[in-house]
Image (cartoon, rainbow, N blue to C red; front, side, top):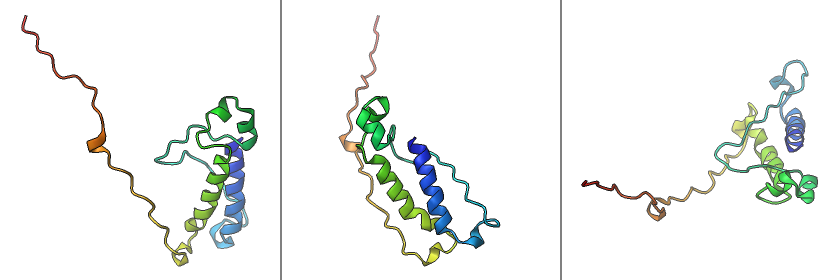
Length: 116
């Protein structure tokens, strides 16, 4: 259900964002959703699914408004896909990921030598 709502929201946003010169003779944009790259979200439940707390709701890691957050972020960056996006202000790069190389634990045992 979340995917359907996400797709319909993106399709409505794309239809209103992109001008007629970007589409073929008034056709509606075709929206195909893929998994968000470099993220782990597990399952994204609708608020209704979340309140029931079956598998979908219990597996939504970030709470009942996860879908709304994804919809908001998607519609925020959608205008940057337009051919006239060069007139928009650049997006901020966001935070850098932490470097945990020296903080990681190793549970690999050393090599055991058999002297038999």
